[in-house]
Amino acid sequence: MKTYSAKPHEIGRTWFVLDATDQVLGRLATRVATVIRGKHKPPFTPHLDVGDFVIVVNAEKVKLTGNKLDSKQFRRHTGYPGGLVEIPYRRLLETHPERAIEQAVWGMLPKGRLGRQLRDKLKVYGGPHHPHSSQKPEELTVDGPIPVHVEPEPKPKPRPKKDKPKAEAAPKKTSARKKSAPSRRKGEAGAGTSEKKKES
Image (cartoon, rainbow, N blue to C red; front, side, top):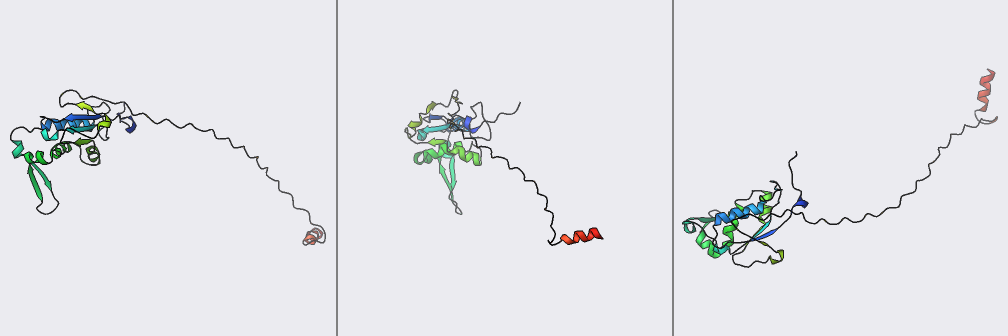
């Protein structure tokens, strides 16, 4: 039996919304990364993008266990010599809470072209509102089963084929037979040479 590989047109896309209020950052990130990667689906294929979209709201209310709010550092580099910036997570959640969840989820995704494509499926917002209501996202929780939707997207209807008129067969050209060269008459050039040969 050959290994199944999902085709791009066979993958159904779904939108989920997850509330990060009082959720542990690591547990929330693992659930989001699983959905974005598509590992909860039966037709999961490692080298393809088969995952769903995830919207995370109330990112500013996420929780870190122990003393990580002060001891854990968010690091980034400006690109200039000596440009390492370290920000405690307590200050990060007050200024840019979406970066904490994005950094945690991105670290669990594959690195490379596929990982950069999967990053676009994560939408994080610090407050309770988001602009994706038209997508009708389903509610997702950190605990419990993940809803699976593998119905393929509707295929476009094929255009009706027009019957082309058949071209009439051209009549075959008959090969003209080669006509025998006419016998030379007396008085024409070369006529006397044959007669002289006969006399000799």
